[in-house]
Every structure is written in structure tokens, then in C-alpha cells.
Image 1 (cartoon, helix red, strand yellow):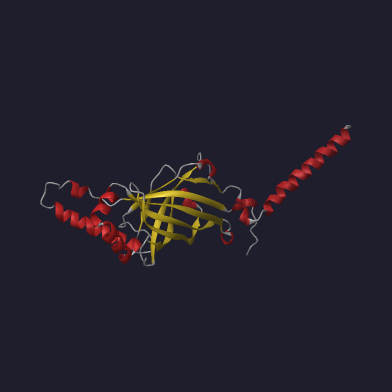
Image 2: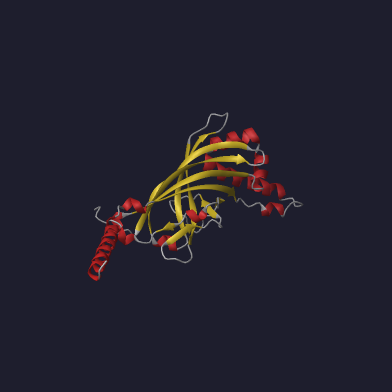
Length: 259
């Protein structure tokens, strides 16, 4: 191969490379969609420490009464008053309360999340939506008390929200079945505050913080206020976390001509 032929080959190779890079600017937007499947566990965080400090006190039974009222209010809102009454009549409030405080009455489930960049915002925002299912269980007894489904209420977020370390994800729960009972359909709303971490401090590369507990709220409004307290904490299964990176770099190589 002579000198001239060598330079022709180099020029052709460079042209192919440049055309390849140029074509990256035409990658369809859906190529940047992120899909995550997560398994989770949710423990309730109703505080009983005040009652434990009064075991020898005349106020102990009054404290337990207030604790029972708080449990009734929480689960009445979460699963519906009629469904909660069915569970209390079937299993007894005392045993359920004791297992609740020992973290043995809990929820397990799966969550499918879909993160899609929003073309109308210049790719500076994203849509989060999804669905999942769950069951309420007496873990030590291996009894399933209730099952249900839920959906993530679709919501647009600023990308910079991820760098703040969390996103508030609104959830609509649908209670679907209490084994052996006529179940009353209930739609209730909670908010998962999912904590987010950066991967090796890289810009625009994130991952769910699998080492953290993620608070669950049941606010009276659409947003969490300073007066709202978490009634539960959820943790995600930490297997295969290295495969669940949310990499939002290279957005300039995506199509923007959808409007």
C-alpha cells in the first residue's frame, strides 16, 4: 500500500467516524427511557416508647389506649375503616399491635418505575410513572392479611431534583383482597420519599440509595408539609444494584424535534 492509498484509507475511516458521531444526534428519545424493577419491604414506625416508659405507671393503660387510637387512625386511612375493622375482628387488635411494634407486621411488594425524558422541556425534565403490587403480612406466622395493587401517579420532575438527594413519588393504593373476606374497595394515597445517590460523584449519573431507609408519608394535602410525620420506612432489595444506574449524560445526542 503506497503513501497516497494510506491517506485515502485514513480519510475514509475518519469520515465514517464523523458520520457515526453525527448520527448519534438523531437517536430517538425513547432510547433514553429508564426502566427499573424493584423489590421492597416496608416497616411501620408508630412510636410506642412513651408507653414502655410507663409500665409501672397508672398512665400505662391510658397510653396504650392512645396508641391503639393512633394505629386505628393510621390503618383506617391506609386500608379503609371497614377493611381495618375486618382485620381487627379476625386477628385481634392486641396481637396485631404487638407484632406491629416488633416490625413483624409489615408490607412486601414489587415496584416498576419508568423514567422518561420530557421532550417539551428541552430534556431538562423527566416523567416518572409506574405500578406495582403489595401484601400486608404477619411475617413470623407467614400469614398474608391483605393484598393490593398501586400505581405511581404520573408526575413531571426537574432533573435537578435528583441532585438534591430525593424525589417525592405520589402513590395511589388500591386494596383488592382480604383472604376469605368480602373486601371493601379503597383508594388511598401515600408518598414515597425515595432517596437518590450520585454514582462516584459523576454529573448526571444517579442510583437509588439502596443503603438508606426511605420514609413513607400519608399527608392530608398533595405535598409533604413540615408537620407531616412518616408512618413507615421502606427498604429496597440491594441485589444487582450495579445494573440499576440512571445515566442521564449525553442528552445532547437525543432528538428534540417532537414539538
